[in-house]
Length: 289
Image (cartoon, rainbow, N blue to C red; front, side):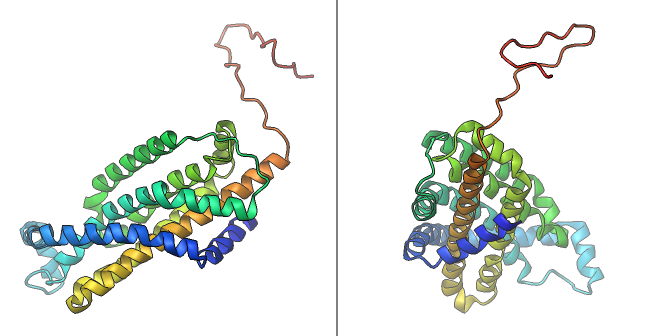
């Protein structure tokens, strides 16, 4: 818990660094253009389609009647469109962070705190891209499959942050260790700190869900739409930067501590013998006393 809190506080301080603020503006520019383009091309049609869906589903009609409403409130369809598009924008932004921001921020942490830590380069750029793409594909499938559950009010506040937290943990932890840890060290750290890393990912997931309030406010208060939405996107980028810094501080500090404990034990290569087959120990492994 000490390492978790220490890395959290250090990441918060690093967010005030001018390089971090500058890097956070690049995803902002991309996502602002993407959000404007999607809104310009598809906003009206998407809202009409969701509104028609809300009027056409029988059990939703009974729900409105139970609430004393003749029809769903006018703000429901726009908010649902925003909530549906938000995870896709989050995933795209996370990929941008992994490709653009994360390496720079991890290098910043390494230079300022871990200058003497040996770089074993257990993860290449290609491996990082494949890891991020594979994890993002799994997360997108999970998001699509879970969409029907979002109509249950408590679950919409639980499922997307959990999925995004898992994706954040997978991508950020891999990139944080790519330059410094070998493959066995990375696997050992993932195994040793899997609960802490998952907790970090989930917390970052909930932090990433917070700007949706600003986003939805821009939908409700149309006059402030073009001000609140860019602010929400920039908050996303800054939270991604914080996530990169948090995972960078945590993973590199954990790697430094693990190396200080001594070399890793060799992976077990002996396969348990089948029933009825005598056990033959490998000659390369010392016998137990």
